[in-house]
Amino acid sequence: MTIVANSGADQFVKRLPRDMFFFLVHGNDEGLIRERSRGIVNSLLEGDSDPLRLIRFDGDAVAREPGTLAEEADAVSMFGGSRVIWIELQARDIAAALEPLFKAPPRDCAIVVEAGSLKKGTALRSAFEKMGNGVSIECYPDDRRSIAALIDAEARQVGLSVPPDVRDYLVSLLGSDRMTTRGEIAKLLLYAEGNGAITIADIEAVVSDAAPSALDDAVDHAFLGDNSGIEETANRYFGDGGDPGSLLRVIIARAMLLHRLRLAMEDGRSFEAAMQAQYVRLSPLRRGALEKQAGRWSVLRLGGLLRALRPASANVRRDTNMAQAIAMRALWAIASSARAGLS
Image (cartoon, rainbow, N blue to C red; front, side, top):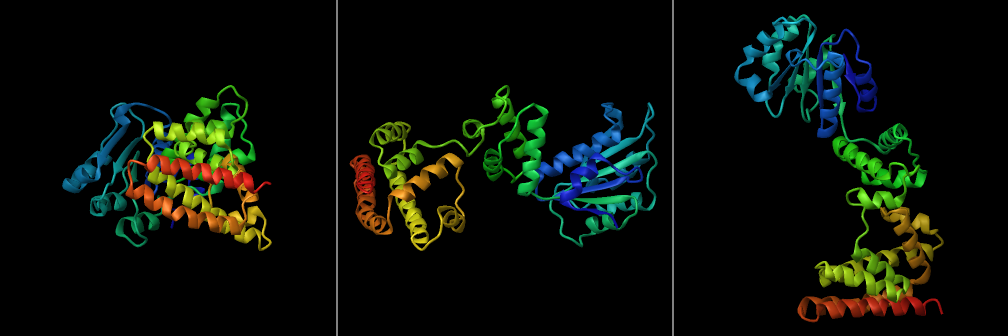
């Protein structure tokens, strides 16, 4: 029985055993499935780009004409060299088409099947897991350690360092799909090329879902009591077509988060412990701003603010003509209260 777990799959693909001819690559990370399938094919062909040595099928074609697969597997390469058949399974069951090849493996031809998520015990998966010259390779989303290792390896190749806090933030933004992860890392490395080290600002400039928004900036400035910052960021938010109702919702969500944090802090917990309990994911820069806000507000004052925000939220929904003015007044009022908390 040969099953390669997700954690060891990358190393396995780099050093394929010589006695393996059947490869099933499956899981729920499509980008990782494609990357590992391609890696297996390239290794089997030893980098040879001769198109006659690589035959590609999709699952539909194999299911419609199962005999074609066996014929192609037994064909002799015109110019010599081993061959590879790469099958993109899609949703079709091709176990019956592969059965003759399992019983009489072809000479000088390997079979790579790229599948999606297959439950344990399905016919195809069980067949690969039980054969002596075949392997089942799992592909599931990377964990934090795997993503961190990938970031370090890619950065090292282009001569960039990644400070631990920067790496942790980047890891928190990646991992749902290996292909997407590699794409985001490649963009980041190209952007930071020649700088020596990757910074938080680099990540926020190019990595998807990392760029700070004018909306969040405006709310940060309000809870820190920064009037000039409110003016600049709120005007930018509304100038870009921002919705006053969305701004009020974010203001209320921030006040509620700060209220929960302050409850924990006034009960003796540190800011970090309180943050961990809330499972909040923020960049180090925005996390620092939130810590300053938590230092300026008390549970009592935040409770009063939440009560005062309820009618403002209702008025924004009710009076669309005055909605922007109401939202701006809420920002100014919060900023004034934040400054009062320092006196």
